[in-house]
Amino acid sequence: MTKNESAPHVDYFVHESSYVDEGCEIGAGTKIWHFSHILGGTKMGAGCVIAQNVMIGPDVTMGKGCKVQNNVSLYKGVHLADNVFCGPSCVFTNVLNPRANVERKDEFRVTHVGEGATIGANATIVCGHDVGAYAMIGAGAVVTKTVPDYALMVGVPARQMGWVSAEGEILGEDLKCPRSGTQYKLNDKGLLQPA
Image (cartoon, one colour):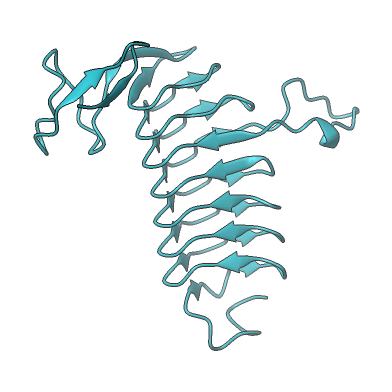
């Protein structure tokens, strides 16, 4: 399906320069902008925004309200929960040891990104490592291990530098969100959660 041709009744937008392959499910109110390609089997929730020059699929799942910025590719094995933000030119890998002359499509590793998480511009998520709900991955960071919920990760390789609230605010020692006033606490495993 291209340019909304095969389904004039659809309740999402596809720019005329973009393509949505057969077998995709696109939620109501989603917008797919210039020069993007959504491959077969992809399932995308309502109200998503897909920016310019994005490739998604095949068989990727995305929740509602996700925003995928320019020049991002979401490969098979990537699964985004609701309200995930993927910054410009961030990267998701799908094989740990790729070689041009070795077929490894049966070795794709799965990566889950939790609800409300942010992946900063030019960050890289090495496959097989999940990103927790509301985590914040700083611009240019390289994630090489699983990221806890609400964790602030920066650097190469990415290291945890603190905690962020569900609103994306860096938390101080009092673990209280300066934007919402929500109080957080560390549980008995040393992980952050709302109090």
